[in-house]
Image 1 (tube, rainbow, N blue to C red):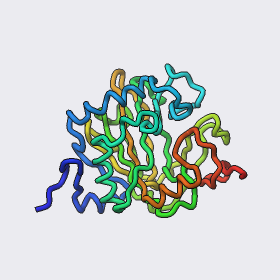
Image 2: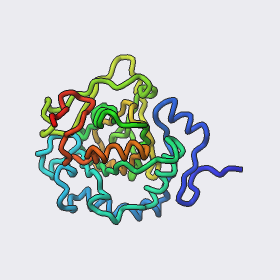
Image 3: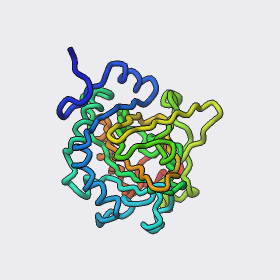
Image 4: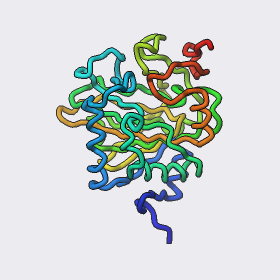
Length: 275
């Protein structure tokens, strides 16, 4: 008999869960990390969220507002590529289990493309992650763009503190036009957004601490602000793409860093820089 769930460094999916990911564009997994495993990775996460890691530039910002916002005013604390700045993070149990899940969903060449720490501060109704499709942020022309973005809940997540919301099946309907949140100048903000239609059926994905969601590169998703007076919503993201895709990205200088210079063809004509 095949065992499912946590199996050492692996996490084995049920066949129906794999089917759901491809049909709906997302899947939820329960208890991917134990309480002991979560406690082991939290200190490094907190180091970033407290703003204690130097030299990050725009990779440390407020993902709900402009780059120039002061740290004490951040609503949605965003630390991109933490393993670049603290290599000690590499190879932790979450990375290993997320890699196992990703191989089952997008194939054996699944390669860690980027990681990210996000934290919605309590009593921050403006800690909104706008509706978007991840592919809207990324270069055109990538081979095999399949993506498994694993998002680990370090806190219970629900409507009050701004859990993830998705539009199931939207990944099969193409890429919608994205617009920069603050006009056409992305020197002011990294944020892009799409408009929902009346036909878009939104589903909330509440999680308990230790659960994850996994979504693909094309599903429309976002999250609301944190209206809780005292609860954080902390999320650890590990996104996997095919090796061919990651190799292509790096060859053109794309690393997912907010400090990258845009010199590749993007999905937004306004962001195409002349060589």
